[in-house]
Image (tube, rainbow, N blue to C red; front, top):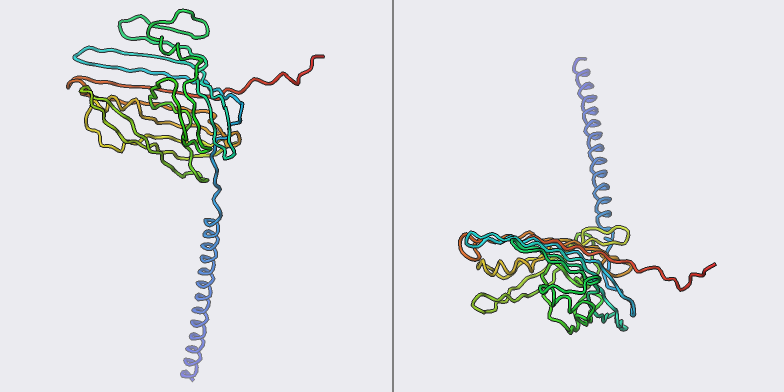
Length: 313
């Protein structure tokens, strides 16, 4: 009798154990299926098409695009114990007169500076001011600049992506690097977070008169898009190894770091902010130092509303 009871109990226990194992297996299988479904869902979400944006210039023939440019500079120099500080400020109106837009979207434009308000102060010297709109007498230090205001500086043809096709400079221009007329845009649609590069070269002249070519590249990153405005960061990277501090002291003004906003619908730069904070020690003796600070902002000037269709009652 005890043997029968024992056998029955063992049988029941075995069934219970088997049922329990089966239940656990079913639960485990359901959990695994749930995990697989969640992983498939996430993979499907990750595989969804990423939104991309086509950045292209869309200037119109006959229009004039104006931007207000403010450039601030502070440069400290120390040589042989002598310290000098230079501060300058310029506020100008940059204009692109669009002469032609061909069937492929290539834009031919004339670049000029319409007006300028300039100020400069150097340690131990009187400050110098000039306003092209109001001043008839031009200070000697601004003679060359004043002579070019209102006159074509260059005629440039660029592709919709900003690639220069032709360029004819009417006036020899020094581009300090912090400002840029038309940043190069990518040739393909890009997503937020994507990067592109543009190579550049600058020529630096040494004190001995030798010219050295330095290879640079600008790194652009699309960081965000909001209300049809794409925000793009810019950083200049030096590719050529530069050990000579004199070369570094000249190169620092050619760098460019900051960001600009591009109007996707209108196809033009809406605003930009570029700044530099560069320091070089020993460029002219062990105790020499130069510290260059610069900030340039640019803001698109909206055209005045047309009064042609306004009737007076």
